[in-house]
Length: 121
Image (cartoon, rainbow, N blue to C red; front, side):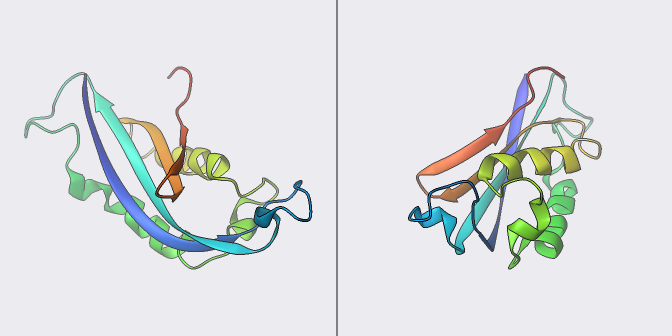
């Protein structure tokens, strides 16, 4: 199995509901997010790639136009705007266009990340 990944970044705000009022994440705050898309394939294409990295510009375009400098609560509603829900949403958006996609990772801080990977494909 061959695997590749590519990182993208953006800045956005959000607040999480269902938390105690004194929880810092219940208040509006922002993150510098890092999104990593993970692709895999049993075979390489004619050029020797899982997929040409330049073909992943659709991810950057989506992030730049739909997520960057936005309030993620508006985008993910009615779901909570957690990193976990954002990872699944991005997986669902890109899986039909990137068949080799097997997981999406979302990091809110350098020390934390959430990964969405379906159980079976």
